[in-house]
Amino acid sequence: MKTSIAVVGAVGIVGAGAMGRGIAQIAAQAGFTVLLFDVQADAASKASQLIAEQWQKMLSKEKLSAEQYQRAVGNLQVVNSMQELAKCDLVVEAIVEKLEVKRALFQQLDGIVSDTCILATNTSSLSVTAIAAGTKIPERVAGLHFFNPVPLMKVVEVIDGLLTDAAVSEQLMAFSTQTGHLPVRAKDTPGFIVNHAGRGYGTEALRILQENVASFRQIDQIMREAAGFKLGPFELLDLTGLDVSHPVMEAIYHQYYEEPRYRPSVITAQRVHAGVLGRKTGRGFYSYSGNLDVPAVPEQQPAWTGPVWISQENVDAVPALLALFERCGVTIENGEQPSAGALCIVSPYGEDVSTCVARAGLDARRTFGIDALTACQGHLSLMMNPATDANLAAQCQSLLQKSGQGVSLIQDSAGFVVQRILATIINIASDIAQQGICSPQDLDKAVVLGLAYPAGPLAWGDKLGTSRILLVLRNLYVSTGDPRYRPSPWLVRRAQLGLSLLHLPSQVSS
Image (cartoon, rainbow, N blue to C red; front, side, top):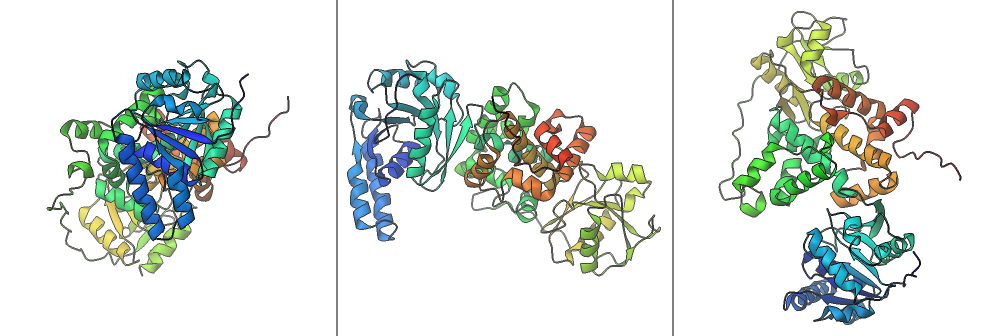
């Protein structure tokens, strides 16, 4: 880029909704002169009042000093004309998520601001390159994607469009840091980092629900109590609202030309048509009216008192399963084959119980699967097969509850619940790294801060074992034939070489 870029001092914000208001608040707090504009009459003034109220609350809670409060108030200015943004070094667009509207705005700004002014879009789903294409200096246009609520969500994606000058992104990284946020840098690809990495959690949970493996309540409980998520996938969908989350699923799927990893679900499409959107409508997967649809608790069955035989086929899982059943106070058989009176326990990675039964010649009526990927910590998944004796299943569930852990009884599935969802999350993250969309370290930071996952997906894959995750995916792919489970080359190569998923290959000097 031939034109120099100004150091950011004065910041213009176009759009005074929740996002624009939040960006204006943190920028003014950080010491920048902020000019807030909105085409709607009085919208910017109302936003300014709301920001001032937030600062008052922070002052009363001693999160701002009196001096900081006065300085922030003085930094925020409402302007009534876009022409008043002419003196800005940076203008951030936070308007409606429509490509043509954003492009028209940027073309209008072209005739107002200086050539050294940076133009940034807060788009969450549109192409930065496409937005920049209609401007006279596309090199000065970049993405600056904050998350809602801006003051609390401490991560911001700085997105390089195809023609964005490196100096522009570096200035935006510095600006973001000055506001107290963590900037992560990304290439201009569908979903950028956070929305891209977040595809696996909801879409795979919906797939499990669609296959009738477990109820949405069971899936939520398993993912909270076995995997450590703050919200289960269906609780999260209800909180976000399907009118928001389903279009994002469809947009990323289509923008990646029907990539199977991102395939949306007919379940959410149907619910959107019905207006069953989540908390905002009083009803989603859960009911939020006065009459909560809490399912009846089934009558507790007596615990199994006979012996238990544990398959040695998955040697990784055996220690955790032995410790689990020892806590339950049961006799454990150690023969190569189970006796005729023993419960049979298998612990496959990425396979179902039926496959294990057929391969080992076990009695299907008394064979169960237990997910041992997380070493049987937290909530347990006890998986049946189509021939399982229902009474034995209830007795086995009661036995496992003696361990002090919750137990969900689920239907036969290649990969249980936790395995399928975590492997999908880790695989998508691996492919983001493979595409070079961002650094592995920025990916993990962005996901933890932007999605509140218990760990970054790449570090999580390392902890669980890359070879285990690879085995889960390969078995899922063989069992289902669905290319959504094909492993990313990033994961395959690091598992083969015993490398961390965070490992970057050496760069060859030119």
